Image (cartoon, rainbow, N blue to C red; front, side, top):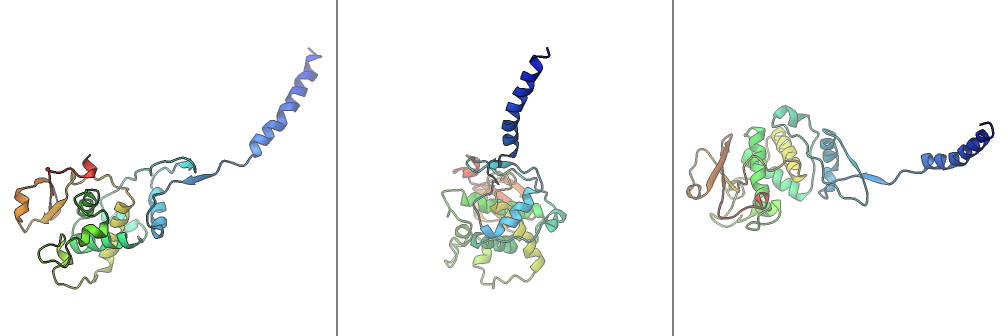
Length: 223
């Protein structure tokens, strides 16, 4: 037994350098996965990621951003930091301001979802600005009334714009799950009754808007 003890100690001494090197070795390079979107909105995306667990992934791996639980309330939206972004962000934020600033937060997300559904459909332009400006300048061809109603597109209610801008940022970052309107690509307010509403399938009503889906064609969000 006594003769075995020195051998055991020698074995331990041989192993310790290896263990020490393992503990002090530099960790593998890691990064938080982000979406390739407007760089100026990174701080806002980082804030949203703080709402839930953040997963560190190796730089040579791919991982989808973890969904964030969106709350359709003004209190939740107002607590978020100011949203920023590039051209696509500004187009969507302005559309939400002129089309839905008076709607509840859920209704604002629903209008944004319709625009997103069009972006994802091959029947429409493949950018937010393209969808929103489609037909602008041609009589009776514009898709969104504020782009051709002859009124100056002046943002007078700054706080309302800042709120819908946050909605736009969240939608652009892919945080929402396109679940409010069931694939709708059209909507109108409850005080009008356009001819096309008789052809498309009504999917839901949120706030002062009625939403419709063209069942003759499936959007990418439904495929």
